Length: 342
Image (cartoon, rainbow, N blue to C red; front, side, top):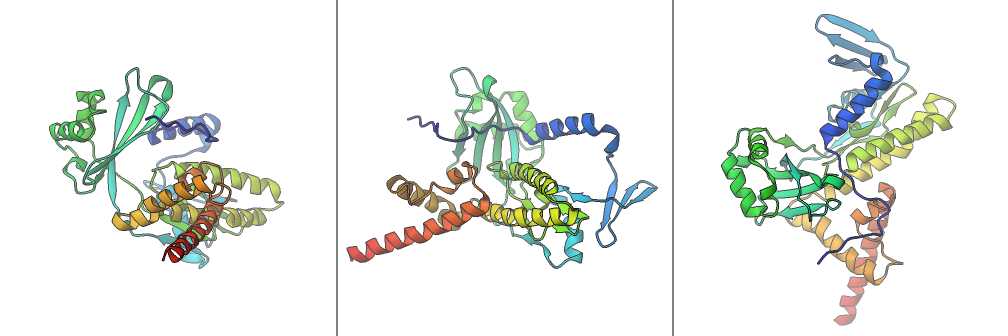
């Protein structure tokens, strides 16, 4: 049975992280070339608005008009703000479902669709595998093999023969499309660690001098592309706030009001997708089942599931509010039904 949804406002397209970084680097270098410097160690003093750059014995102290903390999970600027402003707090969640991953390049043959996502899980939960289109026309896919941190195949220089055996057992549909060269490279390379769930708030700026963007204010595991796409939304929102206000302080304050609640909602929603065991069933699987039933029966009252709602370009805050409302109504309906049945 083939079910292809055609009512989505956007189609999913995937680009591997290293390709995206390469593309962004190329554009930045072409447009801003001499203004970009690499390989400097950075120390930020948000109290005095100083940025100290160090490379070897060379040290330079800058006083920029605006410091943008977009250093991802390193959060150099965010941690400096946290130390100096009680309204800036980094919420850190313990990772209770730790996974690591290795990427698997796939070139699918003719006859396979190149515009859909492929996903499979092994019995017993040893591995998850997702293949996402990176070049639909040529049926080129970026596969992601998720493993437990202590798994033998998650280690550097693991056994290609054991990896081949696992793929034949658990991924027989994809195994023929991974040649020996790629397989050896996958086994040889170390696994990459998924980031933990973090967000910054309720303030993500300081006066008119410092502001945070992207993963520096919201870090999630990259299952649905929410992190990178939200970073682009941050940039768009900051640009809009700067255009709509006459001074930097008001612009950054408006940006904080707009994006800090979104960062919190994004991380909390994403973490709900990643809980292990029974907690994962309650926070992810069961809501999807309930939403599919109630939305099909009463589409004007109940919304689609959380993932489908996010694809409809709604804000994270609104999606979270709508889903909380749906849960209360679903509990009320089910409770009334059980009471009447009794």
